[in-house]
Image (tube, rainbow, N blue to C red; front, side, top):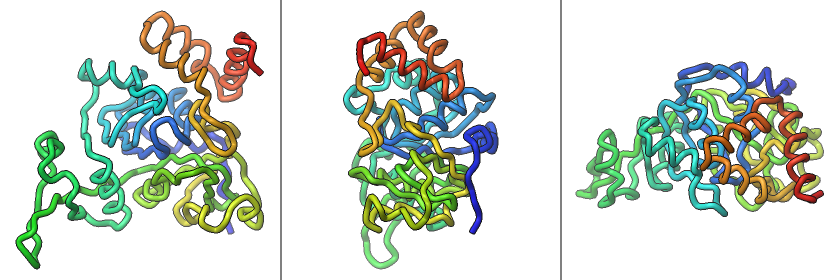
Length: 288
């Protein structure tokens, strides 16, 4: 079996400007933040981002990397709205394609089945349809029923973060929810898996049952070992959301000078430098 382990730099080097990238996780939960930060270090622009968004969307939007955003929501969970996303949307900097969560998931399912669309009931009679003029309805060939023809959401690359993976890309989550990361992987031409820890295949069931094996190696193109790679979002049970840091992120985003300092301290550095800066942030607050 092939060893798909690469460095974070090698993995993100395969992402090109203009691509459609799906970002797994949910709001501020188990986001592939190490991969997002590496994108920010590179001259990658004009992206179409497909996500249940959180700080991943906020950071990429603030940096001017997103041309089009396809999303179900953007939230920091314990903080309802991501201020960087809100600012970018209010300034009209993003082309927007917004769906309800059921429609969004159906779009991913259609893509992984290699279909143009899936007929669904979600969205009928809502404001989602007039807000998305490209979404059409279809009549059933078997009755008079009408359905939303939810278009597929195919991805060039999916980025997901999991608790454990083996060197071949078999991916495991150990927290309370898979967050549709398997659908992102199956809807993509290629998937980059970042993981808290690479373990032998024989050890994948040491911490969870076979139900926690999220998707097979056949959907993984690259595996990046990235301890605390979801920070500052959750990666239960390995760690919870860094609420203090998230509050600092959100507060800094609302002030241009504070945001410039945040970028200088936490983003204008490599991944090791980021985590060292986060450690200093907590030490300055008297936290371990």
